Length: 256
Ligand code: MN
Image 1 (cartoon, rainbow, N blue to C red):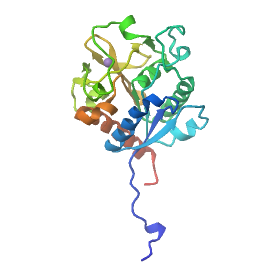
Image 2: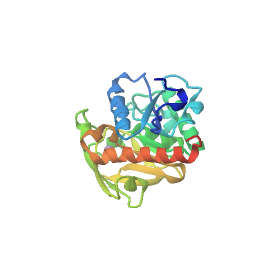
Image 3: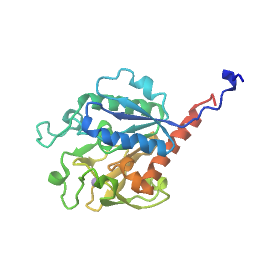
Image 4: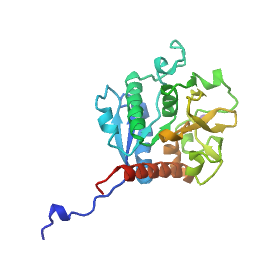
């Protein structure tokens, strides 16, 4: 029996989700495997963008995807974040990654592509759009709640967050206004970028999430892509983001 190309089986059309990372950060590869598995389980098709060196084609790549995840990693460089460049607690800086992710963010915003910014991504988007960071949370803000974890602890909630009713974040998880989230960050948003609405705080008062609704940006300081294996709410966050990407695809694609 002959199968003509024109009679081929339907192509699965999972929304394509670009994920920024850097192969220069070997220690963080385990976390990226979690990321790719979580996107697949949330119904998306993950596409890795390696930000280890300048990516001149970033606009070409990101303009073709349905969603962008700016993922976790080391500290944003002081030149971008505005913190003291001589701060001894600044770590894991990767300037190529900063530049690439800012280019990816700009492209997504220009097209209206949904953006989910996670941990470092939450911090990077905030400073790229004019906000400020705490260079080190225990030293510069408060140390009453622990925000850093071992890898095993990251599979479970470490601290609670209170979520703003009516926010995209709350809508994504069925209207809930409270969640137990994991945590592994020593920096955090100090002043939100102009236009950003803070959508979650931890019990010490630290900003743990924000959104910029008109740009389809949701940012969280925790890691649902790691916690999801033990936590339906984390998977719900990812599934809801993939649904936003699917909606973007459906309103911008005409060749269905
Ligand atoms: Mn935290």
